[in-house]
Length: 116
Image 1 (cartoon, rainbow, N blue to C red):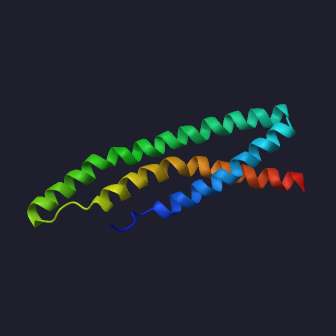
Image 2: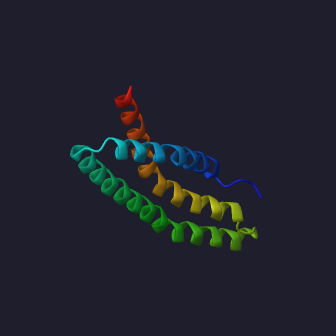
Image 3: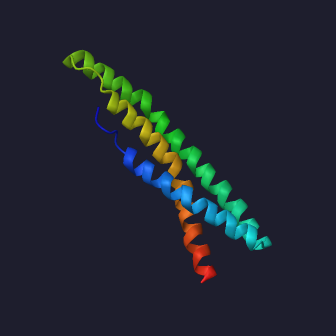
């Protein structure tokens, strides 16, 4: 079975997050500030809201896409590819991860500039 679309990108983003998040948390614990705490809370709310909206939007299209796939498989005699289904589910995961990833990477860049 071939690798579903977005799989490698998701793996890379999750790896980058696994390194960036501890650095961000460490910086915030060692350098507490009210302004940074308020910013963190607002960013988290915004990122996770965007994440849920992105996943919902992507999930809302799946029944239509999969119905079309079923109809095409009936008329052409081809089966539905498991990698197509996994690719669609990876699209949902990518839509959910993108806002969180973007926010974390922006924080890492911003906070690492501050240290220097």
